[in-house]
Length: 311
Length: 322
Image (cartoon, rainbow over all chains, first blue to last red; front, side, top):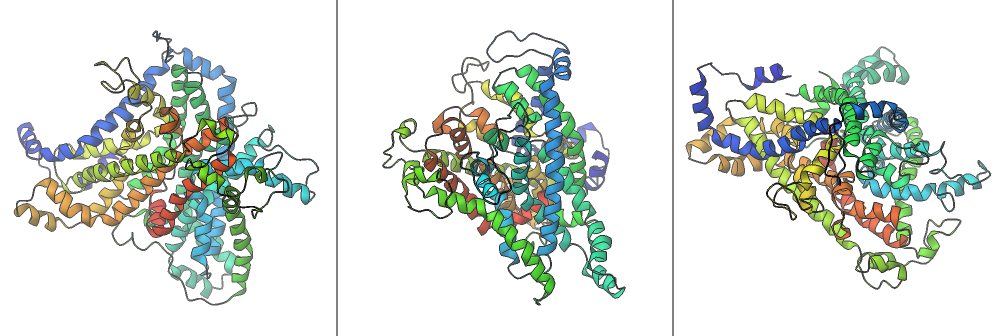
């Protein structure tokens, strides 16, 4: 990355010694001044913070007690044997594994239909995008109400159509809680994948379709052999961004289930929050956060590769 | 080049043209099929909003009625009145006698202040990276980009501890001990978000397209570097600044986990935080809660409808909702 950036950024740089560099730096002092706010804040809240996280993972650090003893790898050992952590990882993967493909599939479907030059397309697009601009807390409150076992709308319609005989308690049933959270999250994210897919579809040259039509390709052949392959970079991008996003979901779990029932919706991030700010076990919580970071960093590097293409 | 590069490219030409160019409209059977899928789907998508708005005008008793009403039988403004602290008659309002509109204004303040900080500081850094040549530039730029590899949720814990120990703030002494620092303050919400590497990156890409001749001409006329930034760079970057500003504002408005951790006094709650804690702790004033939900959603929807083009462009360039 560094090498790539520097070739284009800094074309005329003759090596003329340290004194010359210092002189140039002094002449361009305002440049450093303009960068100072960013440098200060990033050093504290990102660089130092990451180092401090790693430091904390080797300590027992309770916010109230003055002793913060060094415990070596004890936090890591605890984490490996922690049943709840294992559930957290499984739940996180379960959530991401369901939400991302569903969001992408529905988003692509809607984008394809909207892209056929329908009248009223803008209105429809706006409606499908609305959940994305709604504060997630509000969406979660409304869905929590819909899922309610006593007066929720879902139970009302399911009972009325005879699909179920007794009301379901969606959010407190250990088999239904996670699927319920997933459905709500898919609803909240389709607008985003749709918009990105629409932009991707716009970038496909019309000539490709014209040529395929001349060759006698039907709509499905065109979809399979032109649209889907041409959208591959978009799909990849959405998958990577989706993973980064899905691994950090918190709001709807906090509002709708509080990680329950019996930790069935406790994700990695939710467990980090609990360990740190409910049990105040900062050392162990940092270990959990660091594990989350290690999972995420792979995907973040992939995401940055998309941006690098623009540098 | 790939489609992603097309969608994520930030050039002056790309920003104002996000909408698909409509092909000429012709009625086709395939359109009927598309409507048959899209219209019912759209109804499902608006249903929660219809319910929310309708419920916010219903008396508390009717909210729990079964079967549920989509159209209110009696309309009342009780929820909205309670939200703004007028005429609350119910005993259950005892813990929020003055209404909770303050949450809303806290959100307005924190989101606006954070957006203003980001617009200024991000643009300042972006200008330097785009237009200035100085020793160490590439190294610093890559370092800035690398900070994007650390998601904010990973550093919640150290940042909480750091805020608690900022010297001289919130009753702290020289060594940052003794008080609560910047915890439970607006600064604690604003400061960690005052600059964003992604915003810098986005603006830099845009500013690179501003011709150097303009800046050189201003330098020959004796303009200071800050004046060049303020008078030339900022006005010319307006479309990119708008996209970034809208994105930042909505991001901060929706942010939940950080306020949850930092803020503890109810009068400093942001709107999402107040609403969420209301649901999980205090189950009595549902009408007020629903009115508050409508009010917390309105600014987002309005910003979206007014700036739809910028907004969708911003989202599709960044892919950064998370």
